[in-house]
Length: 201
Picture 1 (cartoon, rainbow, N blue to C red):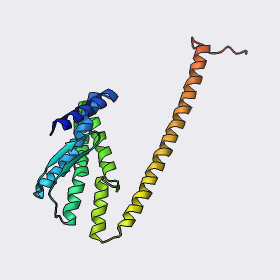
Picture 2 (spheres, rainbow, N blue to C red):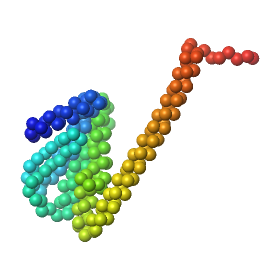
Picture 3 (cartoon, one colour):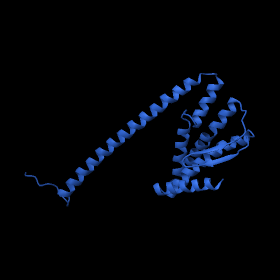
Picture 4 (tube, helix red, strand yellow):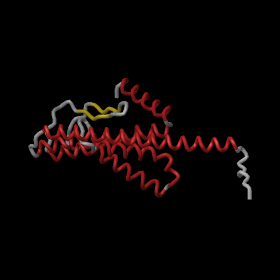
């Protein structure tokens, strides 16, 4: 790890600590390290020299400068290893939290970050593990790579639409909640002692 890598990791930890707290910061960074260790483990299994192992600002990678001659199955194993290690982390955290509920507060951020990494990295887009898995399969079955490109465009469009719709629903719900809260506060201000209004019988 170079000095710049260490500085970037410290900045990431500081940012996450300021944005959330140190437990969440450690959980997020640990989930990324576990993900990349999954890839690194399969690099070692297939006797591929690791030239660089990096955890950066919301990204990470394991790099070999030598060309790799792997079978399709080996490529799939190599690319799926990161998400697999995240999934194993989720299972381990779940079991640990089940038997030792006192640690849930500390392992929940690791579990959540691992789940996010597991799901997002299996999306078949570009530089993600899912994109590499899809490309290996396309090469294996000699499929037209234009289909993969069109699929990525459609998928990205669908994700953007989903995020926009979800964000719109969230904003609408927040607005309704704010209006409801404002109306409740207005009623309390008019009747600060919480007395029921007098009605004529």
